Length: 303
Image 1 (cartoon, one colour):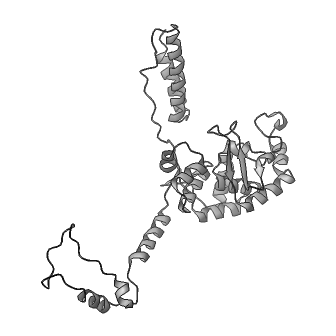
Image 2 (tube, rainbow, N blue to C red):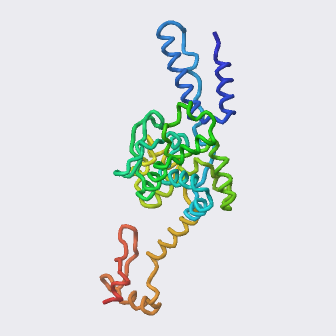
Image 3 (cartoon, one colour):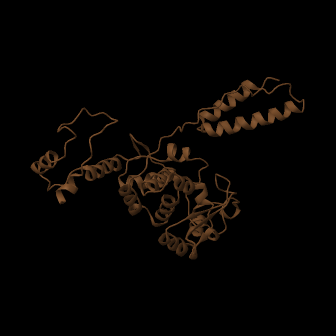
């Protein structure tokens, strides 16, 4: 039985359908494991999938991080129910499916966060996701009047028979999050695509990781909050740089290194001429192993 051409064709079709390289590699790993078991049990002579090469796992879609100003504008123009959804997405980095699985019972008002269940999270682990207390209050008020439940009953046919949705949903997550986000991006005047990448709903997670790093989180803290198994995924895939942020950092560096404005050129020359010379009244040739003594300009001026 030669199943290799059929498997190669199936993997190629999945790739054309938009499946990621990581997903295809997971499928291939499952096939290899099954074929290995079959060969051990003498059902197969050899493992026909042993020579298959793994697919490149580089992200096929380049997403950019929205700036704080763009996020503020987006929240201002969005309807209230989507505004709440965006706020939770930008402050937790949860994916659309994970947000849709949140129920009122998952909100912890005392500890200010969300209890995530392994059954519906991507990393298949129970965990706790902290939330700003102001956002916890908004979610608590919304859940008390069952706003999300009312919207699901109005816009989702057969909501009561859906097994993948909670009985008391915490948020209303549209079935087509990208389509609804496109409407709000247009209303806010935010371009969907730029040279830095595109903006879709998953870009909220990109913005979450990028901004917590900008706020000073360590790599380990960012990895933990993003619930990633490795910091490589956090830093190389989700963490993005912004041109305006890089410019701010450059200006901050200049403010740190530049001399004070009230220090004149004459004062600086006077300080430099008063530096004591080496033995013999002159400097010998300087090398890296024998550097010139450092003189603190500002300290000498204050003296």
